[in-house]
Image 1 (cartoon, one colour):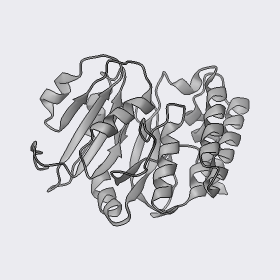
Image 2 (spheres, rainbow, N blue to C red):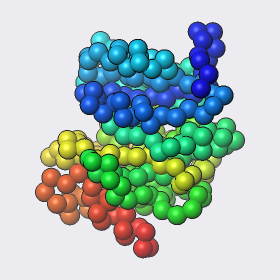
Image 3 (cartoon, rainbow, N blue to C red):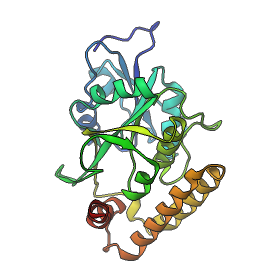
Image 4 (cartoon, rainbow, N blue to C red):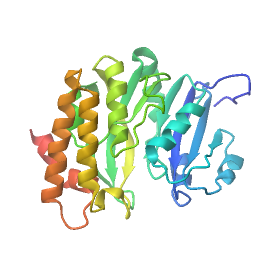
Length: 275
């Protein structure tokens, strides 16, 4: 990794929204492996009013982004990070998740060639045991039906400026805003994107998650309807009809206290893999 000077923009900005993240953030940061010869900044976009300056002191790549507003949600926090980003390419990591070794080394060359690239997603237990990878198998192209088929989000590395977004930024302030953002990046790249399954975004299930809240399914249904309307001029709108149907299954078939991603791992991934 090369140092970033005030005059030189980094090759890559890594955006991490942080909310009550002191117990998990060190693990997320430790998983970031910037390829030799490249420069990067890690933007911690705080949404809880906590002091994360110690992480900036320990890691010269880290920049802190704060706001007088708190508890605004992951979408607005990500938007503040995007607004502060200086990199030619952007990538995203949640403070309780991690990247597999070689993540950036595999995805950045693909993103430079095509404008964006995606990795597989591995769902892990709270203890870090892998439960499922989607999609399984060899590297291939990511296509629109994959977003609905596998029931969880894909995480892009992409050129800055994709997608154009709205005045408040590219992320919505609603449930599943990371899915909508990934779809919009995917669309901006031509409705087909590189999908590298030799590396993975590691999504760690937590003991506390918004997906187990009593009103999550109704809020998610409303968000999907809004996303569907926003995509009404494109054939991508069929995606959120499929996502809404999946949410209905989650509401009807989940075990008591089961999170959305735990349900996806238990029910949807086996079904999709055998299809």
